[in-house]
Image (cartoon, rainbow, N blue to C red; front, side, top):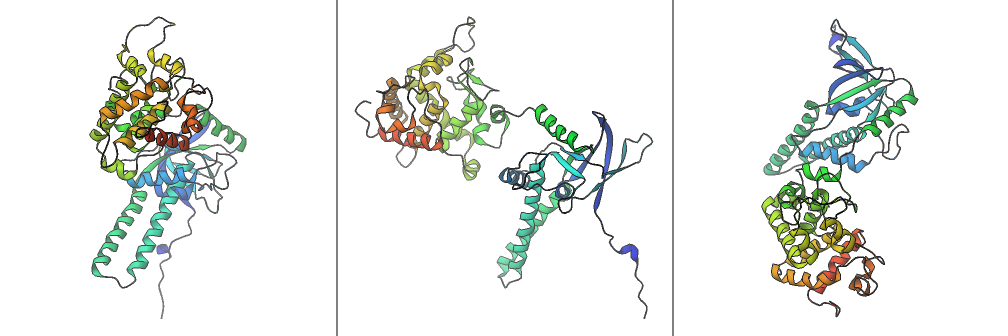
Length: 421
């Protein structure tokens, strides 16, 4: 009996992938520009180990990488820039046009930590895809084990639907692509300089800019409506995260988002994923504007800021009310405004929320005690709040535990105030 075997149908050992690429020059180096499936990233690029940093790159943060994988999973309209990698000489390029600009790029796989490629920019994306791939693989295995047992028809149907969803997630990683620019540089010393140059020339996005454009968070999404309030209108810096004494604005866009979170979730908390999904923008805007109304009416210094014409011309050495506030009042500190936002949230929570007029009246009692720097005879140093203020401070201590503690202290004063209040 003879057996006919067709060797052409048998898989051959494979240790590389081939992509269509464009070859150009940059800085005297050849650069291959291509697009690869997300699922290929951990195959052709070394997967970074958070516990063993690459000596030619920065240490990776596993949680940050995991968040990128979650981002891919939850955002169908995800976006990410091209990754940058360095080829030490293992890639081959076969031109397909007469000019040699377009061709087939063969990239060796990264096997056992040995790779022709080294990541210059994109380590977290590579690790994030690897983590997401492993998550899906483990989840499919768990579902398969469960389906192998005797289960009810209803449960079997649910498991099958879950499996199909997981397979769909894996197929997305295969079907969706990301850019990859590969620089040919065999010299490892020059490769290290490439990483430094990329880091030096990249302008990071400030938290203020992120707050303006990141629409996934309700505190950011409602920003444009909140800053229309008379206290903030024309007084929010759209670019800067830090308010220096020279900055004419009251606060930055990031700080408005911080205050929004304090009003909605508490001074030390974050708005949970569930709350992000259930809260409407209108509810958030209304609550934050109620808070801004209360403090504008309760504190004379903030009332003065509100009444100032933010577009009026000033002499070169003339200070805005916001600048004066930072020099003379605790209310010039975003930290103190976050604390008050947290107090407002506590008083408005529960089955019997305090009335806005009552909160305004309570805050008016705090108004005489807002001078900065704090003195040793002020309520911030002679009551249980003293652990939250340094001597001669112009703001509370900004550690989360201090912010939360101070919110609790002031909230308690609403019902039982110290004799000095």
